[in-house]
Image (cartoon, rainbow, N blue to C red):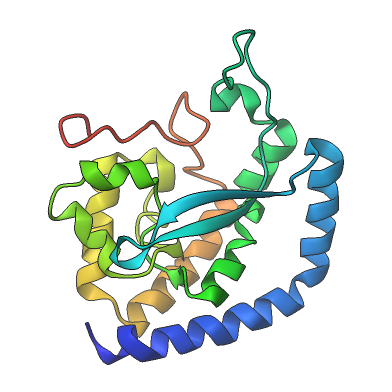
Length: 205
């Protein structure tokens, strides 16, 4: 771990997350009202995710799905609960704005491997588990190289590359490349999925 990753990166995360939360506060308010009107309460989706050193934290995102259930009381598949409004939020990545709070708290960083599900922890091999040597990020190498349109194996390869090469220059490059990636709205989901299919382990990458 270098000096940038140990100290400077965290300072920059705190400074810029505070600035963005203040500057974007009108947008936060507008989206919150729209989510409340179109999808109801709660406005913020909360979900446990593993962070640095596999420490579990609560991830914050704007709600994009309704709570529709089948006759037997089970939740319908994600693609059936994802609304058109929620899909627009995802395509513009505006649903991820509340993660700025996670960055300010120290759960996440602006750049790093995306935080995945807790149940995936026991499914990683030794190399894939290295993605938890750093804080998860709002964006990362996998996000600028296909996002959810690439395979799990490719995602984890990009995550490991990042962990091995983390630096200010790499972070700046990823942040700059994230802008056209988000504007292009590519790789939002895997074909036939609301986001991406479940990672079931290394026998089913």
